[in-house]
Image: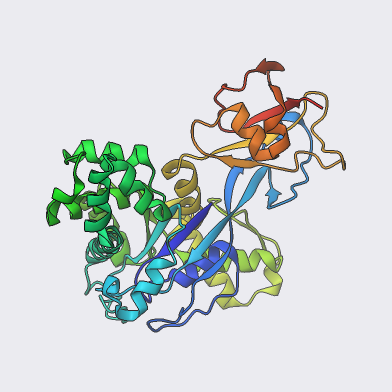
Length: 399
């Protein structure tokens, strides 16, 4: 799974990325500080099942703090986009193409209105961040349209000659963007397009289709960064009213980064996504650091409940993509052959079955599947049984 971090330059995108991953990404106050895409591991926060079974888990990947399991996902920080990026401006084509494999997008905007359309710092409140939401929609839709139109006339006419339905030909053309036949068929019906001959579609119909396909294959939420400013707080409420179809999360990437770095040094106790933190080494901090922590406590955590960074990742994965977390385990024991307790947690697509889970754990388990057992209820379930979030499942396979 890959989550793309997108947006124009200088809105705090690289700070968001570093706060989410603590990876070393250059952070600078000028456009195109990020000139190559950075990828690193972020984490989805899930309530661990360890407390329920009165054990202490030993994750092979990720970690567990305070009974909260942090399951790794890949994040991709794409360099800042500019208007007409789809035409190649600002190295736009390269950056857009970096998003091909992304399952969902987190669009970071400067909610304070302190960054203009070119990614240049301006007086806070002098720029309308609503323009950034519209701008990115246009860039992504035009990018999709460009990919769709490559060889459009040739492959649509070929589809007619071969009596192949439009959705099959289009899905093949756009498979690299995550399009499927069923998805394309659904969109053709939704828009009332000619399913027998796509070569007859108008330019407007193509644009509509490109936009709808982008929404399905690259679902997006908005990280309203710099929410701790006066202008940011005012703009976020307005943005929620204008773009009611989007999930908009108030965010302070700088605050999350400060808390994580302080926790890493042992100065505070903080679990990412929490609404509070505990100071551990007050004597080792100067007045400036203590004032900064006090500001975060009052103006970020006190107002929004958290910094927003962890919420963005969680909601992108668990709500927008609908993934469910499933733990492998056994009724008789929760440890693997090496003695590691609850070492794994899998993030599966919505609607996943016990058989899907078996294949996710290991191909051989899927091929030799006999049945699964719900560890909580100790009841056997069949291969078509649909799993739920935070299930603990034992797979019984033929030896």
